[in-house]
Image (cartoon, rainbow, N blue to C red; front, side):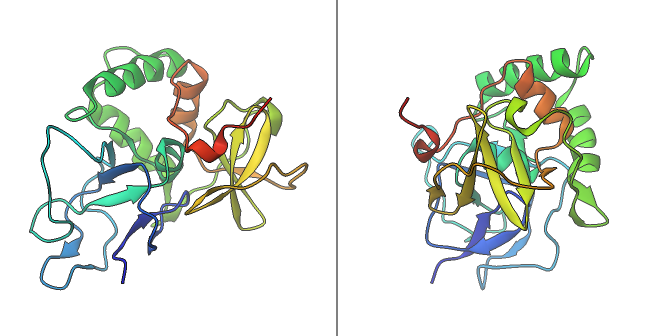
Amino acid sequence: MPLQNRVTPTGDIVADPHRGHFTGNRGIIHDPATKTLLKKRWATPAWIICVCEFRGWRRKVMGTRSWTELFFLDEATAFAAGHRPCFFCRRDDANRFRAAWEQGNGVADVLARDMDAVLHRERLDHGSKRLHPLPMPLAKLPDGAMVQAGGESYLIAQGAALPWSMAGYGAAVREIGDAMLLTPPSALRAISAGYRPVLHPSAVRAP
């Protein structure tokens, strides 16, 4: 049975056999004796995105009283859920994200904890996922943005909406109505300013 440690674009943590391309964490939110989640879904405002392989280190997933390993289909999914790149295992990416964050949000000398505080406000609404109005037409959103419509999550890539699943993205949908933004607005502005989230291979479409 798969562990309950796969993250959806809405930030929910579910059990699914598809691991995804990134790992990350929100602090310690599991019981290592049973490898099950506690009632809380975060233990720190620092929600990070990590690489699955780093310096050859191997971890026993949810096996110790350490951070709880979570897994994401791709970086766009992790951003939508409210995470940001890790400054330890992804320092170059994290610095690029911070630079784009500063440019997109019109700030300077931002620390990781500053971004975490903003993201924590933007990703949650009384413990549930916060949705935001679209800041621009759907087709104008940058590649890597994610939206929700009709209870489904969609990736925006090349102006098209691709339905999300744990296994990857489906064929582009021509029209979706009443879409709301899943990606926190501050992260979206960083993407618009030039940060390029790593997308699952299924998001790459032939011209």
